[in-house]
Picture 1 (cartoon, rainbow, N blue to C red):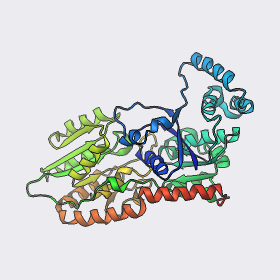
Picture 2: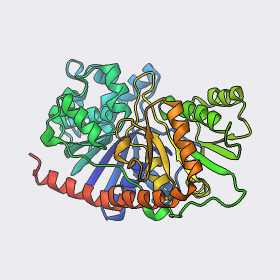
Picture 3: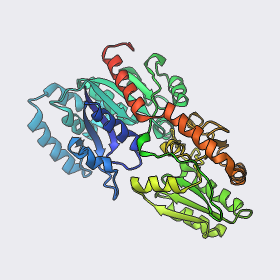
Picture 4: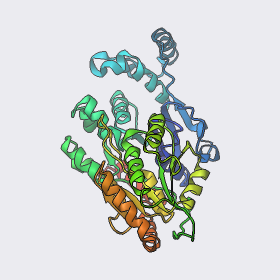
Length: 410
């Protein structure tokens, strides 16, 4: 099959779930091209980018920020490509139908990347890219249109743009793949045809995450790990406050926060304010090989996700799959689809959002009962193997593609 992925930034270290789909499809012999809004030019990239030489498969829309340059370049692109598809190019400039996407020339730039190409599947990750896909389909680009919904596209984006923002996408899209049952229910409430919805979860490559039963050695500090971007919805503040409570009773604790983001300075300041600098460390951004080491060194994993003040919400954080796959007992929150990846009382614990006391209590319980760690780890590993194994999920994705091409969903 020939498959196009429409994404935001690429390559993005925090979106390994998309990368795992792309590399999995390539491993199965399918032809994949990636269409990205921009290159985030991060200092660290996933090793699979080089291994699969993915940059050779990427097409950037390269839309100039400067209006004059954008117009001049657009004129050049129109002259150069008009003979290939005059009707499609004219449609992309229809301001009355496509509004600011046409007026800003954004749709034209995106369309140019797709000219001379035919795909069986156009797979858009995140709802806003799905909207672009819907426009392309309406203009005449071939391929069945699929949109995967993750997190911010089902929360902040809707808050900012209204409940009808996906109306055209729901009409023109062929299939919608929310990553959780939670998001499926919300898509239905927003007006999406339930017959066009299939829950398809993100997954991890279990071969990369070695399992080990957790045990505390005599005299060893209890190592607690959080991994994730330092942004509000990850709930780092509440984990730090909970740790401050726990260390009053248990001094032999090391808490590592791995990742970077806009809240770095604020969170470092909170640690100093609470006087727990000896117990809390920040690693900054980390590469994949470092990620694996940190999982293996930890005893307990914590990610207390919340709904951010701007409405932003998680999908299902991949780190919760990874942590369980390595054998870590986990603590998180009753937040969107997270209860679908943690089995309460079996592989970990869930607490209400922003409930520092409940978070501290669950941490203390695990600290006091290290004999539970191995069983919780084994349960979590087995659960992830059954539900979130990327190889199973990618095979299922191919079946979804084939069924869609064969019009079994219509």
